[in-house]
Image (cartoon, rainbow, N blue to C red; front, side, top):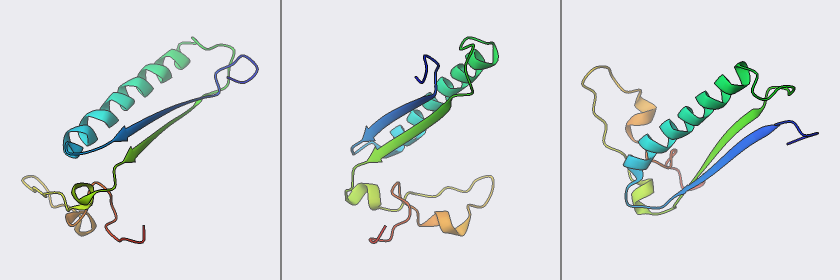
Length: 97
C-alpha cells in the first residue's frame, strides 16, 4: 500500500524436492489464476482510486542434485528448442550461475 492505495503484490514460494516437476506445473498456474483475479478486480474498479498495481512472483528452489539434473524431454507435437533439451529445473546448468 502507498497512500492507502494498492501499489504492489508480491508472492514468495519455496520448493524443496523431490516433487519439482509437479510443483513447477501447479504453482505458476495458481499464481496466474491469482493475477487474473487481481487484474479483473482492477479493471472493474475494485481498487479505485489507485494506479495500476505491480504484481510479482519469486520462487526459491532447493539447490540439490535433483533440481540440477536434466528434465526429460518429450516431443510428440513439436520440437523443443535445443537450449532447453539439457535444461534442469535450475536452468541454466552451469555451476557458476
